[in-house]
Length: 399
Figure 1 (cartoon, rainbow, N blue to C red):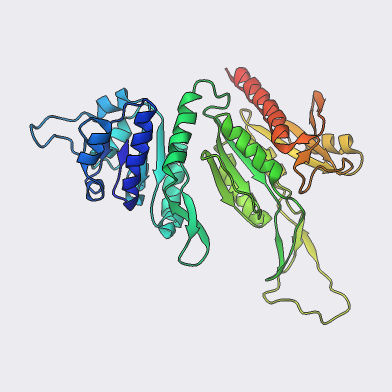
Figure 2: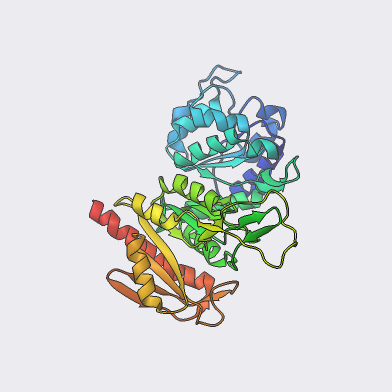
């Protein structure tokens, strides 16, 4: 257990207590700054082990081996983790015992950031988090709050009970999780294309299907990046990294960047096909009997990713149709280079937009599977079963 110099360090005691109660053997490694917020005596009383802070013990000069700790541990949890420590970890600056232990770690590493909201939102911090995530570390997303600008952001360390629950879930299912070590990108919700400062072109997508897919993938051990349009749903699984966007341009940029390192992507978002050619900088007044808007095509995210897809990657899309459903879905499957496509029909009452239920058909070049109407959480399981099958097939072919 790594502890750094954050006001949230007192929460580490709650985490340690729960871990010990669950039967874990906990060794604390604390930074010098961390000792300013919580005493080693308190931590030692909880773990029944001497707390490690320096390379050499002050009393007898005993060398604390970071290499031995890296081999001993089944997992490393750094909670709280400050912006400074994040930066050092991301760039290999081994100037204290905690960082050297991290660099020697052979086991999974879990990181719970804790800092001022504006610091967490800063591009430098986000870049460091992305780099650590790309190394295979688990980032336990912090809680939401409000930035100095008044906008909502994240920064406060996640609640101790949720950190322990996430750690327990990941470790207990690590050898059984079918999507362990897989990185999956999912797009969800609508996009809004601005007409003027108060109006936009949008659609009725609620994002429920995409969020259900993200939760199911995370539950199976995947590292999920959810690119979400403007919706009111919250994620619950700590392994889901959420990127909020509004327009097609923003979703395109996020998807193109994320897809490079993904094993699979599911394009569930209802992206606007057109946007206004010009966006008024002021509210358009009702001065005439009619209003003419000239529209231009938005980015075709599915086609761009389909053209970029490698042989090892799986790409799945959605088709919402009103007529000639199967034929139109097959055309889209081929045109976008999808591995499979999920067909929805507006003719199925009580499904699709804003509904808690869905009825789908999964179509590939060599197969067609039809499913009954069921809750979207159950539909997500059917879709991820198909995704797993495709990933396993490609992995076997690669070997």
